[in-house]
Image 1 (cartoon, rainbow, N blue to C red):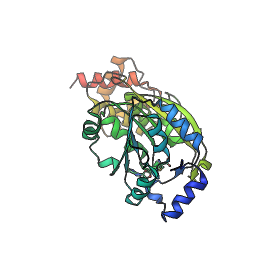
Image 2: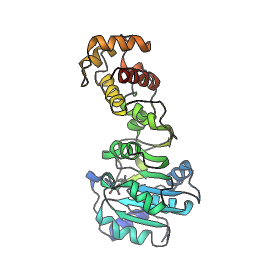
Image 3: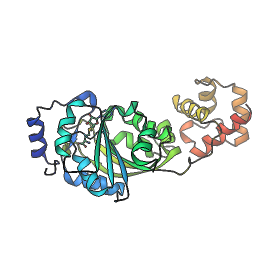
Length: 287
Ligand code: SAM
């Protein structure tokens, strides 16, 4: 089978199988070979690498990964794509397609079964309606990964790599940067997809850190604190933390802020991840 990624070939396949795009599954297929090559190159895939692809669609990215990598497990939710993938990927003996919702899949046991627990690379042109839940599932479940190279909505990519005191900095920046070093690789216009999405896209690589970027005594409390600090962006840290979901006693917030040397008038959006960790650990130490 020839390479799929051209507008002509993609249309032929869609026509041949009478495939109906599902908007609710975020189906926008890539039709540009150069972009596909850049994604796989950006991921640094070698013959040593086992790759998990989320949402292979009709298999255009899968073909490119299979050529560079050792093996690919592609997880696709849409049953109507299975006969197409069987056809488009038939000449690759290092690809396995699994019909599953990635959000419901036990990824640890998948990696254990298919790759004997060895670290994998994730590569995907993600469905934009569930980008954050998918990324956070891989990170929070501490799946053995070296990196995730993903095509996502540009706005979300900017939030993932944002630094303090910028408009894109928020709870997602902290959540991603706690586990990974993000790097934006390339920006992609809507014209390289069928059908075209309404937003610009970005390929970002998240290099998963050996251990989280900061030491945190109680992760659940840390992330709740971050959520509260950004929940009321315009409020001072003192007000945001004492009136947020955690509703911490105002006097206690004052004491802890003083202890870690953070001015109570500062806003959450100015805090570095290290400062959030110091704050969280200081609350934890008080029980
Ligand atoms: N990889 C293909 C490409 O680049 O042309 C298709 C990418 S398309 C943006 C997203 C794909 O993810 C679709 O094939 C869609 O059916 C699939 N998908 C959506 N939600 C999913 C889920 N929860 N689990 C697995 N696959 C999903």
